[in-house]
Amino acid sequence: FFFLMIRRPPRSTQSRSSAASDVYKRQGINAEYMGNQNSRKEHIMSLTLNTSLGKIKIEIYCELVPMAAKNFLALSASGYYDNTLFHRNIKDFIIQGGDPTGTGNGGESIYGKNFKDEFVPDLKHEKRGVVSMANSGPNTNNSQFFISYSKQNHLNGQFTIIGRVIDGWDTLELMERQPVDELDRPLNEIKIYNVTIHANPIAENEE
Image 1 (cartoon, rainbow, N blue to C red):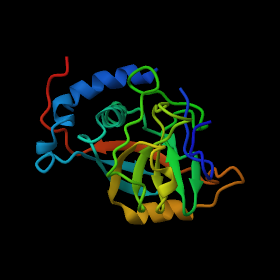
Image 2 (tube, helix red, strand yellow):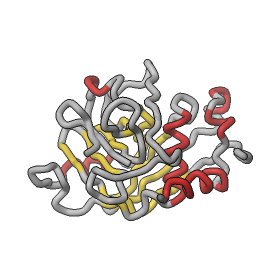
Image 3 (tube, rainbow, N blue to C red):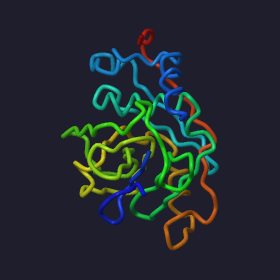
């Protein structure tokens, strides 16, 4: 069961993910760009989660967390997140999804195994709309992720931050208002229909 460790943090476990890596290449998401901070102003990578409650647009920190960004973008481009549920929703805390099984116990990365954390001192869970990988302990990232509803500094150094919400705040508010059961599962499905990628910087060969 994947989730946050304080106030029941975001966690996930471990295949569609290997195909996602190939899609990553076909979509033109270049690994060179991932480490090129000078390209950031010209090439901001963003995507939109098209959900049953509306759209949420997210900027991805490609240059700061390259492994996690590559994983999230490749899974998104491959359709891995299509028709998946947000399985956990806690008001004033987070909403969590990214598990194709919808249980909170599933999900795989494009690397075929869990991958390591990428903690960046300047990236903090200090406001609403922070997007992070969920895990079940150190270096256990796969496909699950969460979006914060508020400042959660106790999560710093525990969960890799991959981006931030830049539009769709009304959708996020609707999500937070949804009723849940005693296990924090939404009583009415909150579904990701599909993901739209808006920028695939400079990209070509990742052979």
